[in-house]
Image (cartoon, rainbow, N blue to C red; front, side, top):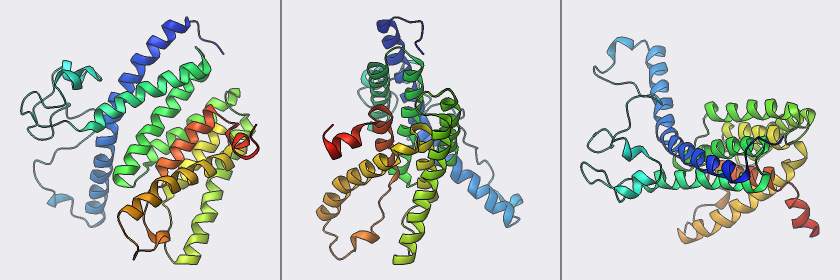
Length: 288
């Protein structure tokens, strides 16, 4: 379904939206793991009946509070500092108050948010498919960075991705309604089987539950027929990145199969590729 905007106007709106989304994602990537850790501590205190022994003055963190500030001097950012990309460049990558360096993750996510928007627009044109794929790509970016930093795929994001995929494909945007439903179920069951098989062979857990939920969400968006492509591309990307990294670290005494490497980022990349280029597996295998 096309959207009533000229291609150039749609591209401009997409770029602005991508910059704003990237700025918001940088905050989500930073704060969501902290919020989850805060919630776990609260639940542990309640379980141990230590509610009254909380440290006084402990402030709650949320996505909306406290206001954006420098993590070193706690100086609240100015309005211009919060403008995506521009704020980083104007301050030359440093805090305006204490000159502390700003992490490159913030600028990287803003640029990647714009890249997702441009790629989706060029691929699908001014359409609802482009808007939906932007949403898909932005959530995948958040999951990718959180898993890289914390080896964690929050349910808050994987469930949003799962349910939005099932809902969007009720109109057959990327696959049929039944393809989305079976894709979600098959995605979860495939990694669930691999998880238990690996545990039987090695006695260790090879992946977390978040990976299972993420593949289920990718199946809901792309359909069950693209699950082999997603797993193949994710596995190839994983090998291309992790094997050289392990060899460079010279961990020859530590078995490769027992090395903890987050799989979520590779699934996220493979899912984005599958949504935009669903025939990639045919090209890889048969050259067509």
